[in-house]
Length: 319
Image 1 (cartoon, rainbow, N blue to C red):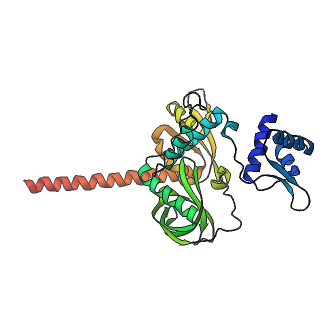
Image 2 (image 1 turned 180 degrees about the vertical axis):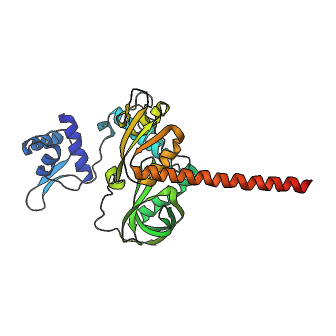
Image 3 (image 1 turned 120 degrees about the vertical axis):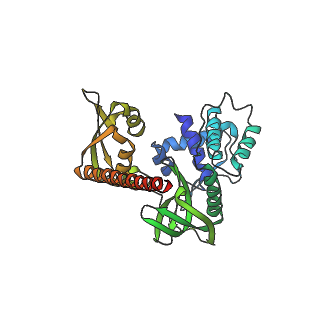
């Protein structure tokens, strides 16, 4: 729609110092003539847009211009408030709550209806996450390195990074930054970080690669598992992998097939399903599960035997 494109053009002009008609035409997938007409429409609406010719020229908006809130619809404002409310759920400062009050104070007549979206980004670790997030936000803003102890499957380590982005993904919080130990950009999970503190100041790198957060990049598949689940596990398969991850067989059991990134994660999940699943493939995973369960049984048998002897000895001593 034209109105959506006009608002989109205005948004770009407010964010960028200068742009060109070809760039806008490519972005909105329309002709340059259409962009020129859109610019004329915006000018007629009283928005101070200026164009300059020659090298380094283009389309820009006059310095100091502010977008009137009436350009936003009631639904737009609801989405903004929902986003702020979600950030406030993990904030230890109450900053976002204060910001919401400022927006609502001047827009109460503009926001219609009740809240329809409620997002809570907190977790079981809210009490420890909020201080970490606040400290990292300060470090990013002040361009301060952060130092911390990190606990991962590969072992414990001490890290120092130049922080750039706080990320919420896969139901967890992460920090993305340049790791001085690895000499590369890395993603760190906040729940695995401890003893976070500010370090020396740093200069932002001129080129910061955006983190590739696609599942295939972060969790590349290493194999495909085939297993049979008890019908009582249908809800869990639907919740975690979707209805297309399994086929219901004639006897009611669920034939489950999906790619997985690593044996350790898969086995931990399979074991959490107790006796409600039987792995068919791959054979290597079957063997690992058999060994783990055998080791667990042997450990508990040994513990039972040891406790039994202690109990017998204690009874004999009491006599």
